[in-house]
Amino acid sequence: MTAETEVLGELRRLRARLPQLTGVLAATADGLVLAQDTADVEAEGVAALTAAALGVALRLADATDRGGFRELLIRGERGYVATYAAGNSAVLTLLAQERINVGRLHLEARRSGARIGELVDHALERLEHA
Image 1 (spheres, rainbow, N blue to C red):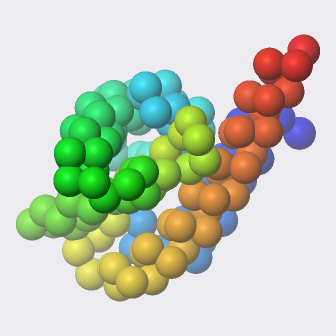
Image 2 (image 1 turned 120 degrees about the vertical axis):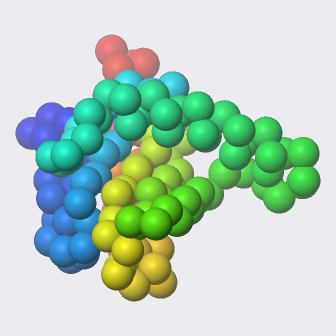
Image 3 (image 1 turned 90 degrees about the vertical axis):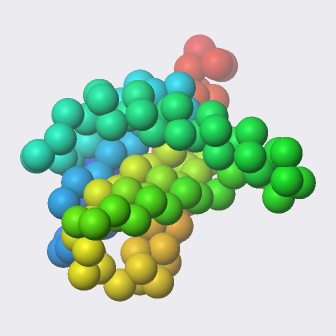
């Protein structure tokens, strides 16, 4: 099983645990889609915007001495966009309905982000040693 297949499986399990999610994607920190399960949005565009937002979030965290990036939450009139660190080189971005329990969103996304980070970081290590 490839890392991409395993990441996609984790994204689907996350959606099953949080039915209020309308889209999920894992991407590299520079905006390359690794796996996605989105219907109503263009995953590549969301990944690119996530990379841009991540750049600003990293600079803001650094400028305010808050430490390394962990997560970013945007609340709009019709729901949420949440981005979580996923290991050393990836991010997990979730699109959620307005009625989602934000505490549960954080709990489940942090777990999935950690798992996806392990998968991606391990795959990158294998590539570096090949």
